[in-house]
Length: 94
Image 1: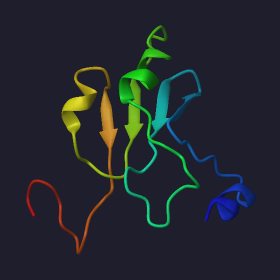
Image 2 (image 1 turned 120 degrees about the vertical axis):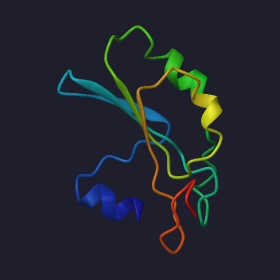
Image 3 (image 1 turned 45 degrees about the vertical axis):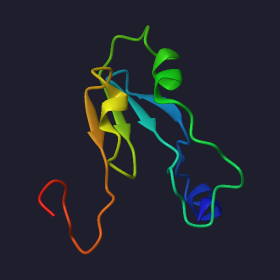
C-alpha cells in the first residue's frame, strides 16, 4: 500500500505534519494497531508532535484512524478527523 501511495504522489503522514497553503496544519498519526504492522514504526506521543509545531499560529487538524483516547489531544488541536468504523457504526451512536 505504501508503494502504491508513493507512486500516486500521495504523502503518507506518519506522526508528521504539513502546512497547507499557509492556512492550516495537517497532522497524520501512525495507526495504533495496523494490520501487518508498519515495519517497526512506533506511534509518537501526540504532545511531542504538537510541541514541535506550537509556535505556528494556524489551526491544527489531526487525522487519526482510530477515534480513541481523545483526552490525549486536550485543547491543543482544532479538529480531529477519524474514520475507523465497522459495518457503518458511528461513535457514540453505535
